[in-house]
Structure formats: C-alpha cells, structure tokens
Image (cartoon, rainbow, N blue to C red; front, top):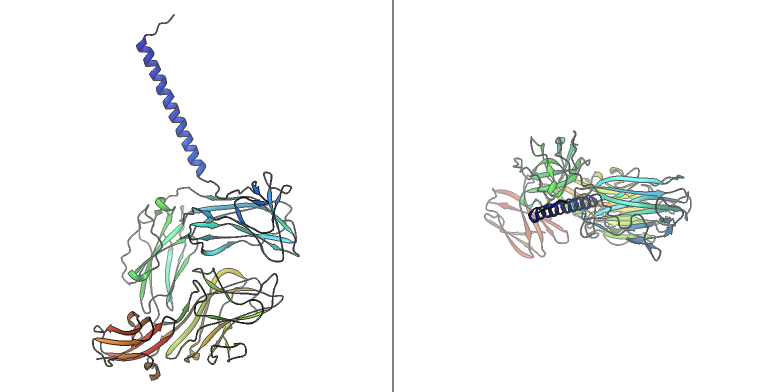
Length: 564
C-alpha cells in the first residue's frame, strides 16, 4: 500500500484544482471565440428562411402583397413564399434592417423560382438614413426569366455614407397575363467583417471640370493587390489648399457645408466621379482623394506617398432659379389638363426628392400634365442656360416635353394659353429606361430674356405607353449683363447714390442680397431683412456696382449704384 502524506495530498489536490480551472478557462475562451465568430457573418434578415408564419404572414416581413405560404415548391426547409402577380406591381418587403455601418460591405442573397409566363420578379431594395429617406438609387435587378430550376441571386453592396438601415424588397409583375406565381426562399443579408490592409494605390487622373456653378470631379479607379472599399474626397475653396491627411482608425465624416471653406465626402469604390453643385461664382476650388478599406475604428486610409490634387474655377454666372425638390414641389406648380393623375413629389433623386410624372393606374392611362416654373425674370442676363437631372423608366420618351414661354400669364390651362416653344431636343433622355438619374444636359435660352418667362415639363401618356418621368436639380443660370435697363434700378431702393462707406437697401421682404462688380464678380453676399439694410462698402473700389436681391419667394430684383 502506498501512503501519501497530507502535505503531498494537498499539493496534488491543488494541482488538480489548477488544471480544472485552466480547463474551464480554455473551454470558456473557446466558447467566447465560437460565439464571436458566430456573430461575424450573422444573417441580418429575420426569418430569412421563411419557416415562421403567423396568420398566413411570414414573421419579420411587414410589406406583404399577394403572398401565401407554400409547402410543395420549396428550396430548403418546410416552407417558401409564393408571390402572385396582379394587374399592378405586388411587393414583398422585410422590416427595416437596422445597424448598418456606412462603408461596410454586405452580401445579399436569396433563391427564387420562376417558371410561369404570367409572372416575373426582381429585387427592389434601398439604403436609408435614420429618418427613412432613401440614399442613392434604388437597388434593382433585371426581370427574372423562366427556368425549371431554382435560381440564386448573390450580390455584394457597399453601404453608402449616411446609411443606417436597409430596406429589403422583391416585387412580382404580370407577364403575358396576370395571376402567375414566383417563389422565394432563404433570404440572407450578411456583413463582411474581414479586416483588409491599406489600399495599394491612389486613384489616377483626378480631374476637376467646371460647368456653370458646379464642378465635376472624376478619376480612374485605384488598382493593385488591395483595392479600396471607398474614397475620402477633401475639398477647399482656394487655389492653394492645405489638406490634412486622414488618420487610420479615425473616420472622417461627410460634410458638404462650404461655410468654413472646406468639405469632405465619402464615396464608394467603383463610382469614379462626384459632382459638387451650387458653388460660388468665379471661385477656385481644390480637391484631393484618399482611398481606404474597412470602416469605423478599423478604417485604413492610404495616407503615405502623394495623393492626387485637382482644381477648377466656377463660371461667372448667377443662379436665376434653382429647385431641388427636397421636401415638396417648391415654387413649381402643377396643372392637370386631363387624366386621373398629375405631377407629384417623390422621395427619389440625388439628393432625395424629385418631381414625378406617372400615367400608370392598374394599367396605362391617358394623361396630360404640366409642371410649371414660377415666373422668371431673365432681363439683364446673358448666356442663360436651363439644366436638370432626370430619370425615365417604363414606357418610352414619347410624349415628354420641355417647353418655354414669354407670354403665358401664370394662370389657366397652359395647353391653350400662351405660346410655348419646344426645348426638348436640347436634352438627353434615358434610352433605355432606368431609375438612375442622369444629367440631361443644358439648353441655351438666352433668346428668351424677357421679364416674365415660364418653363414647363409636360408629361403625356396613352393607354399603351405610360412612362414614369422624374425631374430633379433644375437650374436656370445666367451671366449678369452690364447693360441692365433703368427700370430694374427702380425695383431696388438703394441710397445714398453715389455712396462711399455704407449703402442702404430698402426691402419689403426677407431674403438675400448680392453686390456685383461691373465685371460680374460677387463682392458682397448678405442676408436681407424686411426694412432697411445697411451694408458696409468701405472696402469697395470706386465704380459702378449692381445689387441683386432675392426674397423668400424667390423673386429677384436688380438695381445699381456708384461707389465714390
């Protein structure tokens, strides 16, 4: 028999206890590592396999039109969702997917079965900000084609800047007739958590091109072993910029406010361009660009070497009228000549908000609808241009017109009141149709420089051709001429005239004012109150100057004075 002393026995017990504790720690660490990796790549679609249904509706899905539970035609598991087509589009949308990280890559995948000539499907999803507004263009696919087998959709998307949530939706449309079926199963939306190294190279051929009061920045994408997930663009309102390189692990947020002379923009890889609009006249802007990988505290900028720099100077033009339709139709009015529909505001465009003409209501319907500008005073301007962005899908470009009139009185049926000239051929229309907004180009409208001009977008649809036409970012620009006629001077009361240190401007409404030199340079910009506005002009050299005021309703007035 082996006799173990009490001291040795205590030692053995302690060793065993230590081993047990260590083993527990190892098991706990293994569990935590497993749990961590379980979170990475976790499907963010609730009930993506469509196995849970309550009262005939799949759990987690809150926009369900013509959806029924299916147990025979299934990709995996017990159930799928059957989607029946109808005379109009039928939607199948998931509740908002929260926790989106801008700049991160997400993989969207699902399976669909379409073997019915009376139904076709496609993806129709979108990124959204915290308020629910759409960011960028809708994520759409081509219509499905018939197949006797289940088909898979799999695509990587980079969350745009400002995105905090994702709306997942698929749609079914009628084919040769209505009443057909498509089926869905196994939806997945997964965040790619891979940490990538710094991008290999900067983009090349960075170019800044001025167009009116906008600058288009373009570049050739970065190449090399490690491609970026996005770019940081820095801008400064100067020809001698002092850009500060970003720091790894510290994301630079998007800031498009030029009030401090600087901006920053985050944009996804593969875009190749960005347009800065609404800039100051006759001003030089400089830009640089830094590629990066990852996001948040893992963001890794390429900040060694020399990033590309480009600059451009805006034209000597004034904004006569600008409408971005951010929240409504702004100063533009609608007139329905006939048909059940008329122009309306929609949450699309870049930035979101546009005017939409549509003639579809369970089928193509005959319509004639006018979207009409406020009265525009173009007298005293030269080199006047009209530009806008547009998207057109479904139907065709037939029946879509851009018109201008100098004798419409702003009221009544525009189709029979006033003489309208056709500007349509001056613009580029989408062909084929798309939901992506394009720059329609510009039309020279200098020959219409009267004091009461109206511009109209005219939408027509028929019982066989009903497109959807969306208009955004309308700009009427012009160069203020030096020969502004005297009756304009009467519309702005400025005194004393001549002046030396202070000019007083009398206004009956709030708004803004600009003082412009004889060469067209804006030398003073200021807000305007109702009543007397005293402006310090002690820094101006002697000579003739023009005053342009704009009230809160967008009405402009022009005057002139002399500095002694």
